Length: 296
Length: 228
Image (cartoon, rainbow over all chains, first blue to last red; front, side, top):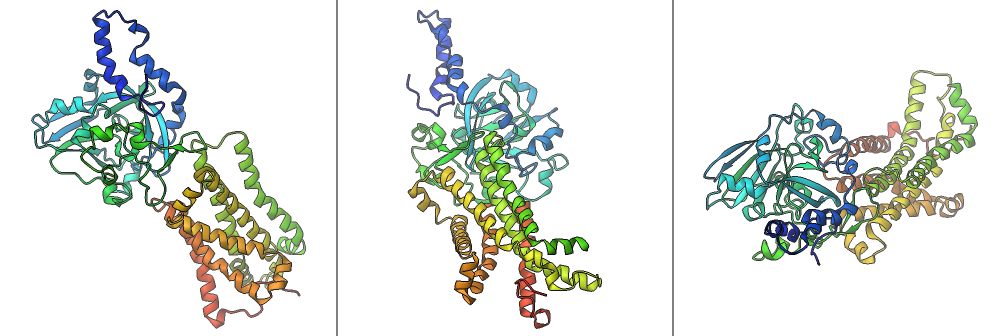
């Protein structure tokens, strides 16, 4: 089976087949599928290249705390994770305030994605959580909703980095609605089969595997549906360097460095970066009308 | 102050000790490399470590001339028995050549790591990278360092005569270039940028003041060793 994907990442096909396979199993198909469950295939693909947990939890870009990636782990210890609510509002039929514990009632997904930071490093992380589209469809977006805005937690008492005006707090990110409802886009609540650590964005963070890491906002408190493209935190800071789309593209250089290569955490030598972080087929499904080059 | 007198009488010893201090970061790095203990992002660690070491040794080198002036002024003000004469602090000057060469060594290591790990010996990547401001500044700075290192032997000093002094004035733009390299590389203003900037501005400011106000010019202080 040839898969168009980065080694170590759950290919889209695999989980799209998930339900089909289960249906076939339930339908007492004659095929010996028991030895070929998507879960088994997923781990076989990814085990070798998964970044060790101690690296992914010890090297965090989380400017709400500090710009020192190794110190975030210590500063984020005091995060109050419970109670935690996520509000879905804006252009929706049914605004919701969701308690984090209610997420357990949604379909749980396990995905191994490579997280590619715009700075040129990456980590392969096994995430667990829910698909963002499940949450959005529960709130029923209105027909004129085109964009989704995410707002991160604001609490300078604990998030000490927010006491300085390094960025325009709270952290704000955005996606086009079709990107947000794509089945690859998830809200992670766990990683490495454990609860999400504070330094990685607990209790709930976004993961969009084909975009640079800055799009994957941490500690989300609000999700708003909008008609117009929202301005994001990094766009306000420097729109030329950190655009709204932030699609991984080795051919578009960051003004200060090349994006052709990336270094996996724990490794010394760089490896080649793939178009849309290995999800190149999205170019036809999501961006076929637009020039991908302009979608930085 | 007898300690300073002792050091001044043993310039060679001071020089050896400084040399040991200068090579110790390289030994430490070699140990880290061999034990594969370079943290979560070894690529970043190697480049940062060599870059910061070069910067630190440069700052020490660049600080020696003003430092000797400040210590001298302090000793005269307090009317201390030792240290009021320029020649009392000769041992500080004795290290400058060795320190400067070490800046060149660490900067070259930094550059080699960049060529190996970032460019992977690819000429095309090298050309693509050149227009980036901090990369262009880095090549220019290394060129200056190379020129200064090549002309550092006493033989060259004798050969170039007065031009040697003129050539080595390049250290002043170099100080600025090294800081700009860091500035254009960084995403946000970080603490290193502020610390290095503060120190370098003080050192440059001292030189501007000294050279533009005749009252401050000490004609005997040419930056060279003084014989009693």
